Length: 116
Image (cartoon, rainbow, N blue to C red):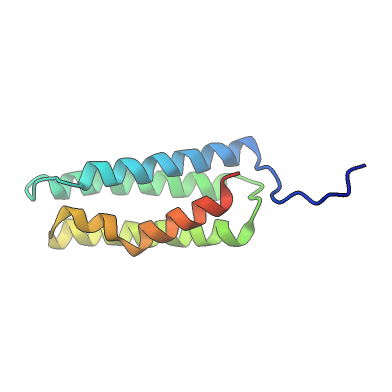
């Protein structure tokens, strides 16, 4: 028997896949929106919103989150990031603003706590 506590319980494969998908979606959203012309920004933002929603849904359906609190924080951050992307699409503004997004920063912190 091993009495040494493990720092993190390994995530289930489906949950690990959902986390990987979330990380890819966050990166692709930033890549898609940064340096985008203002005329193309609304269309690209809508595409990003669809991907972000799909990733959030996948996370909610995946079971066995190793850290329930970080999982909840990640879902909240994804929803906040979606709101920020939608606002950028509605009002416009510098596309680089998405890199300073509070929701993006929160999502990245939560992901780092969940990824083993």
